[in-house]
Length: 40
Image (cartoon, rainbow, N blue to C red):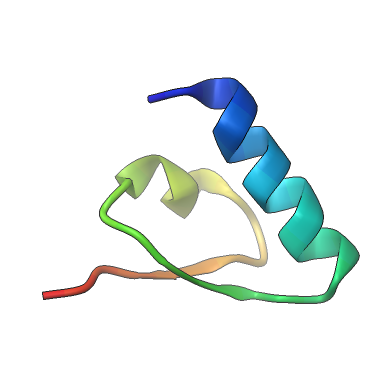
């Protein structure tokens, strides 16, 4: 996992009020207010 890229993704999402993310990366589950959807 690249923590810098993940942090940037979360910061941009929060700045734009985007609560949903499609990702296989379960580390995003630790971010409060973010809902991760794992694609099939």
